[in-house]
Amino acid sequence: MTENQSYANDIVPILQTNCYVCHAQNIGLGNVILEGYANLKVYADNSKLVGVINHDSRFPAMPQGAAKLSTCNISKIEQWVADGAPNN
Image (cartoon, rainbow, N blue to C red; front, side):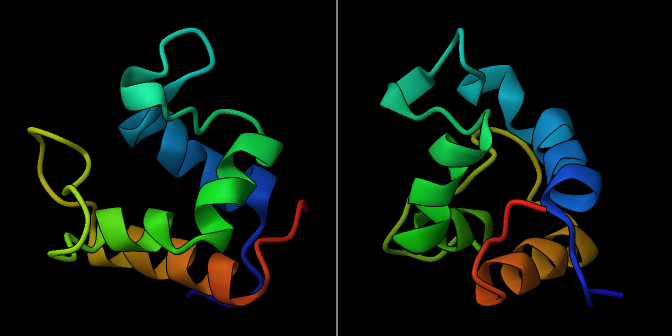
């Protein structure tokens, strides 16, 4: 179910499991930091977050060197972004 996605309850756990290993505050590979709402919001707003997790040919496929996120997790992130990426 992808209705009413919450940044804190739905999105952060996906990022912690799949993204923070490379894109946490203290790592920031590729100068990309996804930890923290303000950091993530930049990538949600400029379409890069959705592009990379969907392996869109215009973006580097993420997570790099790992399997694509599950369809369910991608849908959750897409819905959160479509809802305006609220800090909820």
